Image (cartoon, rainbow over all chains, first blue to last red; front, side, top):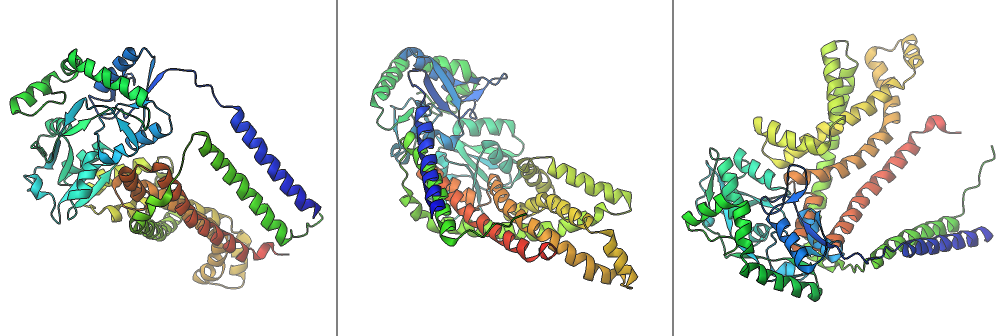
Length: 269
Length: 255
């Protein structure tokens, strides 16, 4: 019996020590660096330069936002499905990652006013007979989707008869369409346009939007109204100052011309 | 050496409880520290998909175990072949497979080899890839087993006039099984965990199901904790099996 008591006391002690150790080392959070989360896998919005430093439209936007707030900035590269959890756990202050504002996401995070818009389009294998969005929801049609994108939500809702593959990376989706493993990859117009340009002999692009426009917003932790209000003022000011035109000219001058000539709406219009 | 008395049942139970309390407290404190409140109720909605994924993980793991055992045996025999080309081929296979990440192999086999040879079914491709991967490890287990058999056993077999086939059936095989069965069962636990990587080619097993659910309900922590629990149920069962097998085949160490 004595030994048993010993065991119990020992384990109680070790739990106490652990609690003490864990609470004792709380880091002070006096640091006012603005930590911005984005997935650096969506050029030219979020990407890395040849040295591995974050670059792109969203990076510039993050820098300008931090300048406006008067805070130093740190950009963190986080996989797409980890972005919202990072906000929830306070690992990042704001997510600027071409994220569409959706009702589902609104349940877990707060969004700023929209700063850009995009439309879903289709990258189709040349041999496939898909010509419009109406051809998608049929048995035998294979549709590739990047996980967690709005195309993922679209497919869950509308493509109940087609075979839908949910993949982790954009490149895998494009490879499957190029190889004919999949008929269609659904993503935003710009990506589809660019991927089609680099795979002209095996793919065709269907740029007619398959659903209503999607608004992109910056996301903050639910209830962080203070930061959100500042972000909204920043976006309004940035718009009126012509900041988005500058970003377009810096990163996407050619695409802007093509989109204009095809009559497609532009991201920041 | 003095033999320890077996611990009493009540001691066992209390000790196990103490360990459980310590681990649970650690997890609980970590979550409190970051102000995380978990709500597992939304997972209930997805019970059918989770169950399907769970089944798929088991099916893929078992299919891969069987194929990788066949492959492992062939490779282990090939490695001992006197024809040098076969021997080198088997060694190269083991080196390459064990020396590269499974993720690289999955992409390489599915998108390049699979496409070239017309293997488009993700599930078949997944089982083939996993079997090739695990086969390399299993062949090493088998080789180790074969090499551990004492040469005297063969000499005795020959001296009592057993034919080659009889020797294999009555001497090599039983000893080999006793030695490698626990290790093979342990390998099954690895296969179960490794199969989660097949999610990158959209094989809808347990991990992929969880990823898809996370993309829809954003409850990443709840989903992944539950995922861990499901894998643990599988691997814990396998580990119990391994232990039982070890006990059963330990005749030689019995006193």
